[in-house]
Length: 97
Image (cartoon, rainbow, N blue to C red; front, side, top):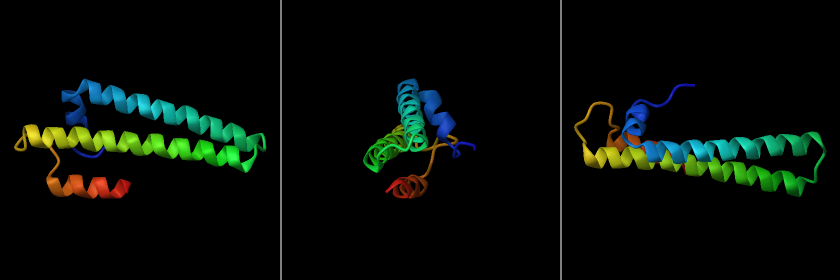
């Protein structure tokens, strides 16, 4: 799966944003592994749903961080190559809602 156009450039300018997104995704990956283990071991549905909610929240936050980095780049240098347009950013933001 490839990154949306503009995303790579935005992270190239903001190593801290990239680090935060990667950390959130790794956290979600660990939580998803816990969900799989819970389902395989016939855990109570309450435990499975709690873990699923944690995974979902971690993924949502990672997505919002990606959009936040794009917004910062758009405001800093709106004419730069690869910077998302306001319409693209709005569409991406709404896709997470």
